[in-house]
Image 1: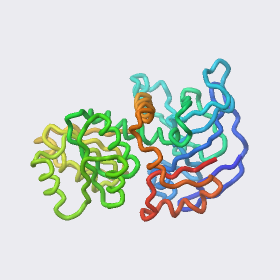
Image 2: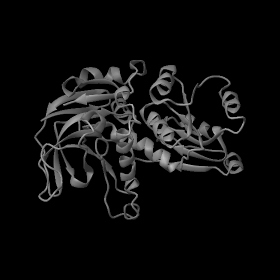
Image 3: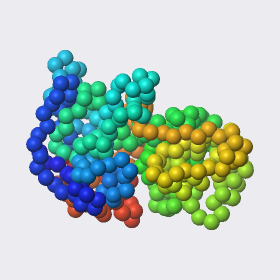
Image 4: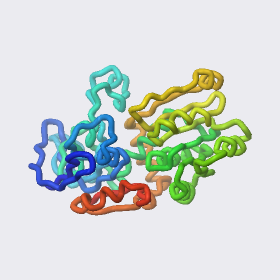
Length: 336
């Protein structure tokens, strides 16, 4: 089968590998779409903290069933999406239903080889039928679920004023699901093109660019009260540290990004707000279900989100260009 391999930072190759063999309890999936995530660009750039090379990337996956275990409800040819978080099922977090933060979690395309390949064998519990959804939309379910999970973690409600920092794909997903809960949403980013997209495609209530006088502008926007929920989706340590300054008293700060740096906050600033500080990792089955329901309800601008696409066989020539900010990529999809 054709496989795209990140041999080392900055170097991709298209290679032939043996077809996988379906193990007991696994489903063999013919991959049809692979969404490219910021994680993949970090792997390509050599800045991902949890990775060893070489690696077959790809965790935003949709495809069709080739073969399923006897007795499975899945049938050959059925369209599916893949939940890429392989949890152990036995640790305390898993026993509490928190499979997204399993102690021994293995994420396809990160901790083990993923789906930038023609075929993939996956545990049956990680393969979900998506009849009627469409393969493009199905490949977007995972990244949207991460945003939906962050909003769930922040307990966003209809009367909340929400600031989402970072208008990349995960930040946009958080905006979509905060709006779906009826919250007033403001987008914050360094790039005007991303803010324009958040306004036109997602329909945020406000969009602010990072520049001098930002804190004063946000204070005026909120009558000096700041925000009930601040979601930082930048994966940038400086932004994650500074996000506390935008949290209102009694508010929640949700960290969607992950960095290898230390994050230090002044205790008086945390305490005087009685701040709730939350980290958000991956997503849970309920988040995936919320995404599919939102797609069915027309609340997700699927076509607008997919800004770039190419066949897997052309990925080597496109990947470096797509990783550059000036390319304007929101969501690139590889077709197989």
